[in-house]
Length: 157
Image 1 (cartoon, rainbow, N blue to C red):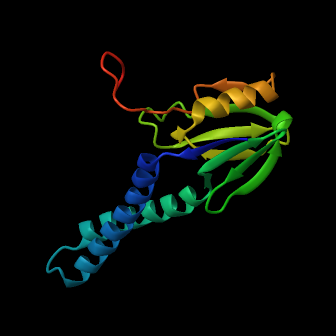
Image 2 (image 1 turned 90 degrees about the vertical axis):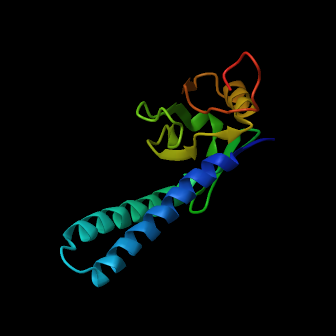
């Protein structure tokens, strides 16, 4: 059984952004109530940050934080995700092209056209990739998971 879990930095970034955006938006909206003069900018920016935080809070719940390969099955688990899929049913694994900072998610497509979103930074990503490729030789993995290990002199830190 091979298991890969989301790194602490990925979780902190995503949940940190969510809470900062929600609290910042609420703070601006409450400040607009007590502010003298023109409050339109506070209302507009506060509503925008509140909307961004709400969208992120809903979105991040549907991302799998843990992936386990057990024989012929893959288990994707997260706050609102619990799916077991046969390895042979997975068609491709790829990361978004517009995510250079590795903060988004990886999309796992199945033969039934289902898309499962997985955290992009995983501890154990290399072992997970090797297990998936060993069980499914037709699987396409295009620059999917990344793992940033400890700093190594002379390498990409």
